[in-house]
Image (cartoon, rainbow, N blue to C red; front, side, top):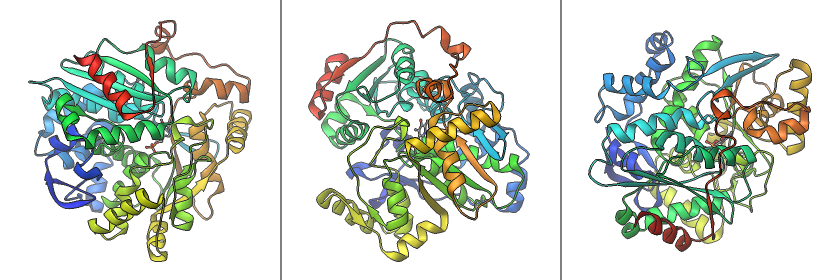
Length: 458
Ligand SMILES: *Cc1c(COP(=O)(O)O)cnc(C)c1O
């Protein structure tokens, strides 16, 4: 099995290559040449497994040329040792809601689930054996801290994390800027997340710079993240023990929900995937109207979803366009020339077969947090609340699992305002909260970032 690009099917890359590169040459995203399809008997067998063994089975399909199964199992086991629940995730019933808590990792968001494995893969694949690797990542608040927790103090690896200055929550920033070792550089960009992501994509496409610094990426466009996230769709499906299950997913860059789409392609009988967006609702609009048109980012109380260029959507487009790479290229060209593209009616229908798109406003999000607190004395974070809101609004679906994407403590500023209750920091984070924050503020441009990186590694 190998990997090709959404914009060029003739390319052939190994798992190790795509793991290291993140983004395909020419700006496309990597996809695997084969997707394993499980039948009923397989699903039955998988349903008996522990989370870690299930993760081994699923992830192995995508990297079997480079890692043997026992090694992978060992690596996964090691990756999840720092989680505060043994089975990594937890499915809870809160009233009528099936809540899948994905936030019991070291930095309190679902990003840890993939990032801890990725950190260990860097060592295992020995990508930094001969030459220092410089990992560069953009974050809307949670990827950064998860990447730092995964890569801090690793030999021969530096990590540069770009976050939008003053546009993430205080706790998000505090965790991110205090937990890292000397190989970690936090950079606040005077712009939005989309600006950070754009700069990173540009740097990946500048061959000279990318080669010069031996650059690698761990953003949600990295396929390795998607495959780690497929696992909890299977796991929670098996745990709920119902038919006709749908998932409601707080969505920004379309990575987490895309993992659900791949789970469905692998044979998991998911009914619908509900895309919950905040007021930055490009995905809700494209699903319901066919128009993909990035707008200016508006700050919200769900900063990790304040994204207008949902990069992983290109991976869905590839399948919607019947795997025609030329069509993907022309849509992407149209997007960069005209600032938007429109899908045809039959293409929208295809998306709607698997997806629902629902927008939840900040006001609705607050009301949901408040209501769940009043009814069940349980606090959910604002992102998770958009998932609950979308599940409530959607018509004619039952057995919905809502992905709980962040621990409420990470957004204590908002949950406290809404519920009046102040949450305490989880034990393993308390020691960091009084540490001095370490980050630099730089301008919103490609060259500012390049100069910054070069000044730190020379
Ligand atoms: C990253 C993130 C999201 C959005 O996930 P995508 O994969 O970008 O769609 C939602 N909620 C939280 C808390 C996040 O950290």
